[in-house]
Image (cartoon, rainbow over all chains, first blue to last red; front, top):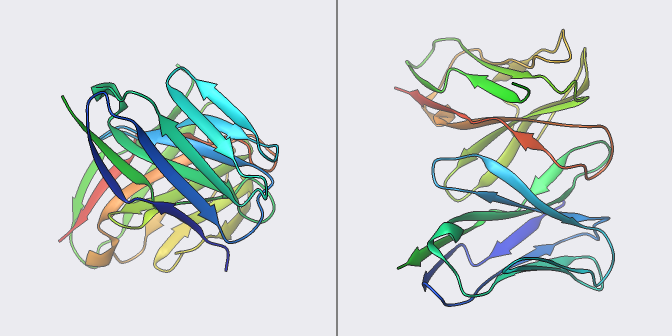
Length: 111
Length: 113
């Protein structure tokens, strides 16, 4: 069945270092979404990418959607302690509003 | 305030008991979802609903029952709780369409002893 995989599962960085998480789908996606979940919190929508090769930036966060629309990445430049949390990618699952989520990448930042 | 709420936020129950988790949204979103979150598994879809009186199974529906008599409410019932159902449960809602962003409730942390 359809799968969305994320790597790495965990990433520990020193504050100021860069961070990247990768998302790979077993099927071509019409779009991909990214969510952030702070420790003890709930997932919060960050962004959606729709076009092949699309790149979007939100301050220090850069999101990319692969040319084949089967992979995506989130890159954070110069991490801060406020970036701590788990980052999930998600793609549409079948018809309707269902999403399939990757397992998430948990980011910890050491001050 | 508009939003999506869940109750209770924390629940401890015993094996074999029935427990219902409540979810309420004020946006009149068509779609509502129940997920469970466990270490190493991310978010797994239990059930979803496209509209009032329309529900369908997700990835892990066994042991759960849902109903949606009103657009704004989507309760999840564990008919006979098992230890394996210890988890954090998130309710979410979204507007109609493919790939529309989902809005998550604060979650219910359920422990089954």
